[in-house]
Amino acid sequence: MSYMYIESFHKGICNVRGGQGMGKKTKIALAIAAASAAVWAGTKAVAKPQKRENKAVLSFMRPIVLARHGGGHLAPEHSMLAFEKAVAHDADGFKVDVRLTKDEEIVLFHDASVERLTGATGYVKDLTLAELRELNIGENFECLEGNRPYKGANVQVVTLRELLEAFPDKIIYIDIKDDPDTYEGSLMPSKLWRLIEELQATNRIIVSSSYSEQTDRFNLYAQNDVALGAGDSDITKAYTSFTSQFGHLFNPKADVFQVPVKANMMNFDSPKFIKFLSDLNCHVLYTEVNDLVTMSRLVRSGAKGIITDRPDIAETLLKKYANV
Image 1: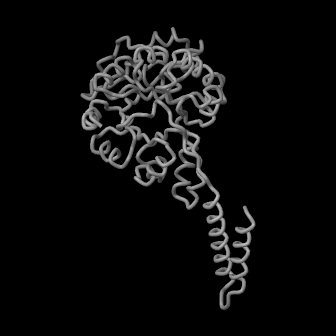
Image 2: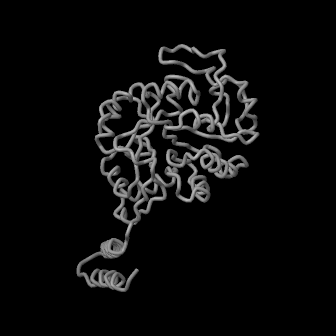
Image 3: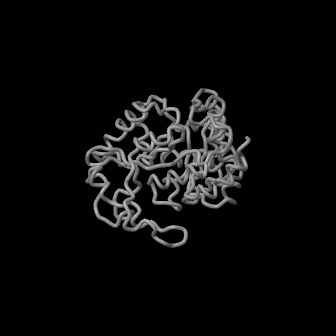
């Protein structure tokens, strides 16, 4: 802190000490307020928040729609059936989760365990790709009518390579699920980068993880050539900075903030929060939004996109902004 701000702080303390008729607690409170004001003024004068550089994948001119897990309310999540249905509803791309198999293949899978989707037991990390493909990921899928149309079928797990090759013109938002402290988690960032680089897909990919460490590791390889999504700690830091008087000190490490409407007493749908991040060239995408009213409200507030399980509903939103 420069001399002038230390001097301001000192004068504030001295003025309080010289106050007449004040109790000790009042004097202390005023001293803290004076110190805070001096620090705030100092940082406001010298802070220069760094905007994120532009990324090709984020150059869209209208709000985008990404089908979460391909649109898991319309077809088995992360299945080719789901991705194809999402494309039929004009989704701009997909938000997918990735895990590493026992034979180090990158597959699209949300849970660590296969039980919820397949009814079988075991973990993705302990099974080879061939073993996973013996399981039906549509076994427990329940459609909107309450039926199980894929029970006993052969809906197979999809690899990230297959997805990227099948839909070369779609945006893919990739969420690394493997914990960085595990064997598979330690391998994932480098393997993911090599695949993206091999398929020359850097301009249509966003990579994130709830573990900010995973995103940092990935970027050691990518060197900012790929757009990055915010991890849990990044999102909390952004919101805390926004609600404090020190938002001008916030320097984002991510290009995209994928957030719910609300979580843990934090209201992420505030237009001012969206603007706070937009001013830093950060894009806000809202996840698990499955009704048209909320989709429309968020877009009007400045959201750059919607991540939804219902691309059929979001299609109406896309049509509204088709000529933008």
